[in-house]
Length: 202
Image 1: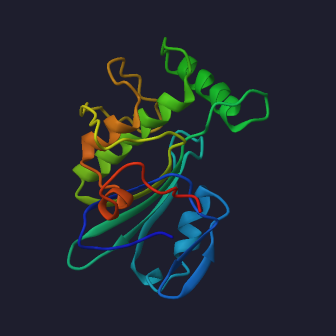
Image 2: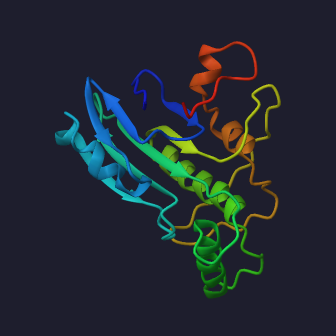
């Protein structure tokens, strides 16, 4: 379930996304992240739609829809998926690796293509670009990794260039760094005071 509360400017929902999302007793199917703009448009907020789109690098790692809130407030809902490491030419991970290698060659970037780390860098720089433009963010993400709020990460700023993979060599590419940068809130951590948290995929 995707929980929406306009009182909070940044939400993080990590773990596996459910095949359906619900709000106000309406159910919609969410077969893939690149359809979030189409799916959310079925909500009663369709008249408030400002923008929608997906990962500008072209890897379909996340998609988003931006709605006009109260006053001048702009709220961007993001669903994101970080591919787990799997072998085989037809897997999501390997396809991303091939595309990233081509992009890095085009932009004369020397680092080797690492899809999981690249996901964190590109998502962070893209989010920072939107937050700087005064957008509120609600992020629902399947990061395919664990997160322990008792071991905080260290925030690391990144520059954003549309359509170009971020090649910052100092960023560790971890989920905890992404969370630290934006002071994201994990709904499970808000509801449960001790670890381990219950699974987010049931």
